[in-house]
Length: 204
Image (cartoon, rainbow, N blue to C red):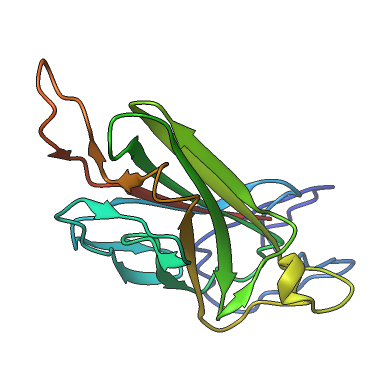
């Protein structure tokens, strides 16, 4: 018979032959300390399939430049349905893309996030470039809030898929904006497609 005495003991893949006896055991329901990263989904918007702890996700596909309009438009590549793994308290949803002034002057744009069709009103984003620039737009979602409020990205729990996407709005016809391409490339003004990337971090 073997005896183990320990104040803190972490055991994985334990195989027992015979009888296991124990006393004064406190079960820890989550193996993640507060603030730890549980999983990180990182992908290029090229249609690739990525497997993480919570499942397999197919990334959106972006193969062309997208021109914004004076009106809200879904930003291609930003939409994904995601379910975080158990123990997640917050989710950081990040979309990285290139924004450019489509006419080569001053581009001005507004951006907003939607969760299952509900506009997130406390995390608006703004953009604007004279030529082109890298945009990194984060969305922070609370999965352990005191009450549900989708407009604030607050939920008491998150156990089934939620669809998240970004929308853009061009300020005016005199401040045109395009995304996923650079207005200037080397010494020309031909648009070169630059597919975006998507990153999702589940945090304990």
